[in-house]
Amino acid sequence: MAINFENALGVHPEALNFRVQRTKVLAGNLANVDTPGYLAKDLSFDTVMNQMATHGVNPPVPKLDVSAKYSVPYQNSKTGNTVELGVEQAKFTQNNMDFQTSLTFLNMKFNGLSKAIEGR
Image 1 (cartoon, rainbow, N blue to C red):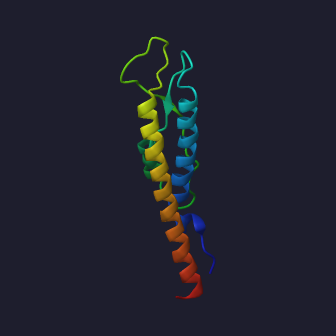
Image 2 (image 1 turned 30 degrees about the horizontal axis):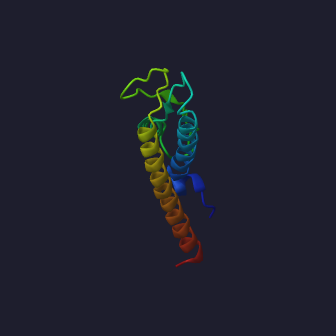
Image 3 (image 1 turned 90 degrees about the horizontal axis):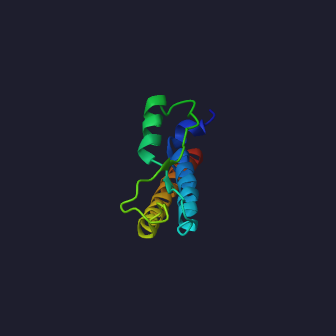
């Protein structure tokens, strides 16, 4: 009997992919912290999960529309830049921890599949 990896792995590959995409967006914000007029962007995990719930997880897993939205700053700057260094660093760190969590869940799924294949 063939294993359908999309069913077996669930949302975890898409969650990991989302974390990678968000890392790129947040890194771009951090790189442009001193760029006048730069507007900070972010991705919403809730939006992605709502899309997954709407489309369902079982075959096929849809390709999600993950588009960056502009962030609203807590305090405006004179240059029009909306990147707040401390806020972006905190988001980046939290996203890194979430990435590690998603990767752990995916590894656990693969370990479970490996044990099932070996008959343990």
